[in-house]
Amino acid sequence: MKKIILDLDTGIDDTLAIAYALGSGEAELIGITGTYGNVTVDQGVRNSLAVTDLFGHPEVRVYRGVDHPLARDTFSVSEGSAFIHGANGIGEVEIPDSNREPETESAVDFIVDAAKTYGKELTYVPTGALTNIATALRKAPEIRNLLGGIVLMGGALTVPGNVNAWTEANISQDPEAADYLFRSGVRSEMIGLDVTMQTLLTRKQTAQWRDLGTPAGAFLADMTDYYIRAYEKTAPGLGGCGLHDPLAVAVALDPTIVATLPINLKVELDGPTRGRTIGDYDRLNDPFKTTSVAVAVNVSRFLDDFMARVTSVAAGK
Ligand code: BDR
Ligand code: CA
Figure 1 (spheres, rainbow, N blue to C red):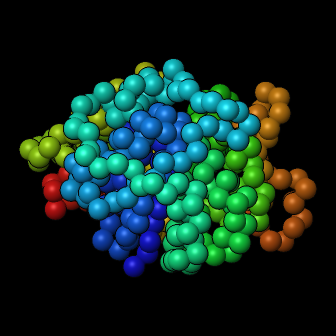
Figure 2: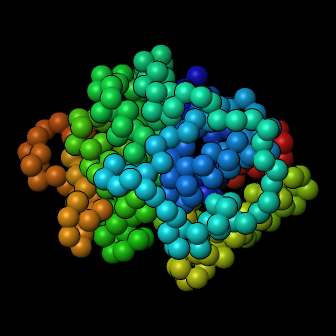
């Protein structure tokens, strides 16, 4: 069975990614590592513990990660993130705190240990700032060749960013970490706005969760409706909310759901385009391409799959 680590800034679509993973019988979620972005690391860890309890999976371990970008000492949540995900990250919906605590091992050490233990069986799926994996790769470069895969949600290659014209939110949180990952030699797959803005959810689908009459279903519906309302303000006319993070989990489990472009990527670190994911000119003629960027997605296949898996969790099955 495939092993998965989700590295999350546990906001709304991160929570949907947890539900997707837990609804996927072919994969084992061996741990959640906490990063920052939509929320602080502490709030994200709190959310991950609370939602795994609510989804009936208290066995999922949660690890606290690095709480600030490589190039800065602090992090605070932007107004934009708080608007989209709510101040608590889960659409201002109140759910009970877990009585569990995060593990004592750090997220970075857990990632290194898991890569050594599970090797090619393990896929690491980061959907927030990339600080934890960059730190793990710096600390233990040998895991580069051990890991089965890194499927990250972040970046934008063929479309504009969502923070500004150039940069996507997860890359913008820690451009140095993302650049380190892309140029470290490790193989990765980038699931960016190119495809995640094509996979949209509407109230028609969230109503199906509410109609189940379960606590998990009501929570998922209320939380996601908050996200849909935010999208109606920030992206009027789009027709739903972007299922960014669940799509990365879907690709980790079934790579054929997207079509990819092999490319050596870098992140621009200076000037107005800071945070842009773009081809690395220095490696243009290197025949070995380390990143595959998703540029097309089978939308209906993904959405059907998403609803089946998340609804099974919402139903408490
Ligand atoms: C990404 O940024 C975060 O707000 C979302 O959770 C997602 O991972 C989309 O740009
Ligand atoms: Ca995220």
